[in-house]
Length: 555
Image 1 (tube, rainbow, N blue to C red):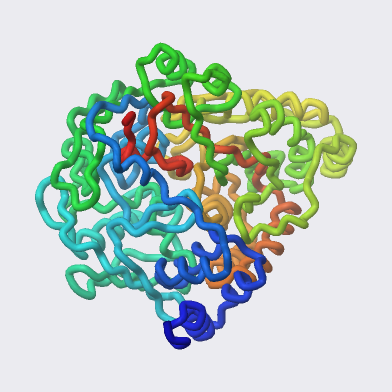
Image 2 (image 1 turned 30 degrees about the vertical axis):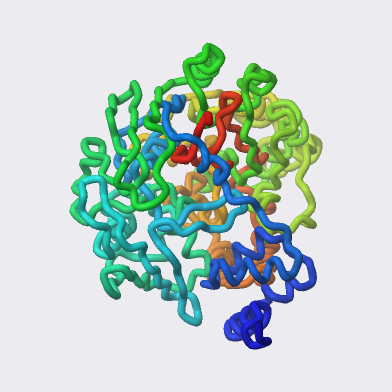
C-alpha cells in the first residue's frame, strides 16, 4: 500500500477538507469505535474506509448483529407478543409501539440503526453531503421490488419523504422533519439517486431518514393510505393475515432483494397489558416479547428458560409540565417537583439497576456528546419547599397527572405522586389507554399534548436530535410542555448544524445547563431495553425499540 493510499492519509485529507476534529479525537483515544464510526458516516465517509482507520487506531470493533444465524437451517414460525396497535396501521400517522413494530415487518428504511449507534445501509447504498451539510445525496439500492412487483425508484423515495414532511398529512414523522426538510425539496437526480435539499445545514440528517425516524419506511409513490389492506413494502416478510386488535402473521418474501428470511412465518399476538404477555410466554405460547419491564417482568428475568436481550438505550419517560398555564408557569414550581424525585431509588427499585439516572435533559449518558460534569439534580425536599414558598404556593397545590397505560409508566406515576406529596404537591392520577391518551396527536385533540402534567414514553434514538427538537422547540410538534425559549431554540439550531463532536459537546453543555434551570420536562431516567426470548432462539439483533426478525432461528 502506498503512502498516498494509506487509509489514515485518505481520511486525514477528507477531514481537513471539512475542518473536522474527528481524526484527532480518534488518534488521542478520546472516543470509542462506536462514536468514531457514527460521526464518520454522518460526514459521508465510507464504512470500509472508516473500518480500516478504526483498526489502525486499535478501536475495538462491534459485532455485526445476527450474522451467526445466517448459517442456520431456515424454517419454522416465530411467535411474538406485542402491545395491541392503538390505531390504523398507516405508516404516515401511526405513533404507538405496537403499530410501529408490525409496520417494519414488511416496510423498510433507507438506513437502519445498528446496536453500536452507527447506520447500516438498507434501501440506500451510500450517502454524501455538500460542504456545509445542506444537501445530502443518497444512492439507492438497485433491483429492489415492492411486494406488488413494482420496482423501487427515486420517485417512490421522494413521494414517501414528501408525504411524511407535509403537515397536511398529520404525519407522526414531522417530529423529525419539521424545520429540517420541507415537502418538495427532495429532488430526483436519476432513477436511483435522490438529493435532499434541507431547509438549513443539518449534520445528523442520515438519522432523519433512518429507522431512528420510526415512520420513515419507503412506500410506493402511488400510496393512497390503504397500507393496512395491502402492506406493500420492500421487506423480507409479506403479510399473510391481519386482524385488528387480535394479531397478524407474515410469511417469507421469496422475491426479497437481500438475504432471505430464515423463518417461514412470524406470528404476532396483540395484548392490551404486559401481564398476559408474560403468562403466554411462560405457558410456551410465545417465543419472544417485543419488550418487558423490570417491575412486571421478574418472572421472565429470573427464569432460566429465557434469554434476555439487553440493550443500553436512550429510551425514557418524559414528565412534561405546561409552562403556559396553571401552576407550572413559574419555573420554580417546575424545579420543585423535579427536586422531589429520588432518582437513585427509582433506578434501584423500579428498574433493579437496569437503567441510569437522568438529569432533566435529553442528553442520555449513552450519547458521546453528553457533558457528564453538569451537576446531577438529586432529591432535596427542603429546597423544593423553599421554591414553592417563593413562588407563592407555600402549602403546595393540587394537580392532575394524565398518562398512558404502557410499560412501567403507571408505576412511575404512583411514585411521582408519593414523592411529590412530601413537598405538599397533591397529585391525582388519570391513567388512560394509549389511544385515549394520544388522541389525534395534535394540539387541542390530545390529552398528551394538552394536559397540565403528563408522562409520555419516548423510544430509543441513535442521536438526541429528535428529543431536543420535537418536545422542546417553541414550535415543536410534540411540545406538550408548551415551552417557548428563544435562547434554547437558537442553541438547538446551532447544535443541528454542528458537524463535529467537539462543537456538539460545547453546545450540549449550554443546552443541559439551560434545561436544568428551566425544567420544562423531567428526565428522571434512561432505561435499558429488555427483550425476552425463549432459550435457543438466536439471530435477533439487540437494537432498542425495533424487532427485526428476518434472521431469527432456533437452529
